[in-house]
Image (cartoon, rainbow, N blue to C red):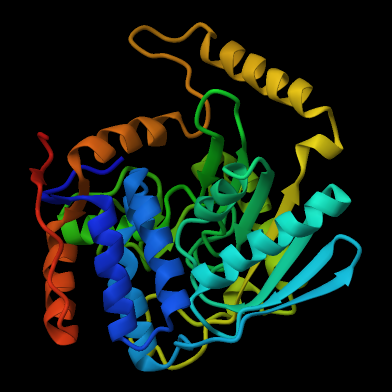
Length: 363
C-alpha cells in the first residue's frame, strides 16, 4: 500500500470521468467502459500502481497509434475447452473481460476453460479479470507477459517482464480470495509511482545500469525477480512459465522482444499475450461442499498463530480492507496523476470528478 499526497474522489465519479476521457481520445464506448472499470476497480482495492494513474499511459497510446481505439475483438473456440481471443491491438482490458466472459460460458459446459489472448495491450491489474469470474461463482487463474524490465536470477540486465499472476476463488459469506502479484520483487509501476511521489524504493528490489543495487527510482534500470538476490530463481522461474503461456501459447513474442512500456514512441503495437483458466467449482465438487471447504480453509488460515502485533491474512485481505475504507471515504489519486488528468480533461472537455477529501502520508 502506497502513501502519497493527493485527493479523494468517489469511485463511480472517477469511473465515469475516465470513460469520458477515453472516449474523448477516440476509444469506442465498450473499450472505454472496460478500461475505466478495470482502472477504478484496481484503485478501489488500493492497487494504485495499476489503477487510475495508468489512464494517461492509455490516452497516449491511443493518440500515438499503439492502441487500436475501436478493435474487433474475436473469440474462437479451438477445442472443447480451449479458446483464443484476438484483441485486435485494442485496450487489453476489453480483450481480458471478453476472455473471462467466454471462458465462463465454456466452463459452464465443460467444467473449465483455457483462454489464450493474443494481439492485446497492457491490461492493468490482472486481478480485475479473475475477480470478475469469482464474483460470478467461478474460480480463475490469470496472467500476462510484459516487456523486459526484470533481470533473470543472477543476471544484471532486463530479460523478463514483471509477468503478474492472479488467482481468485469465490468464498461464501465474504469477499473472494484474491491473489494478484507480480513475479518481480516490485512492479514497474511502483517505480514510476515512487518517481512521482519522491519516495525511495525498498532495498534490494532494483538494479542500476551498472548492475548494482539501488533505492533511487530514477536510477532503476532493472528489477529483481521475486525472492531477491538469494532466492530470485523462484520468481524468475514463475516469470518464465508465464512468459511461455502468454507468448508460445498465444502466438505472441516473448517479453524480451516486446516494445517498451515506458518508451516515448508509442506507435508500435504492443502485441502482448494473456492467459486465463476458468474453473466451474461445481464440476469438481458439489457446490455446497466446495463452499464449505473454502469457508473452513479461510477460517483456519486466518486463525493461525501470528508474530506479536500481527495477524495472519488470506490473499486479498489487505485489499478488501482498503476497499471498505475507500468505499466510505473516496479513492485516493496522487497529486501528479491528478494534475495530468486535469490537463487531459481540459483537452477533451471533461470536468474532473468532485473532490471529497484529501490524502497524504499521515492520512
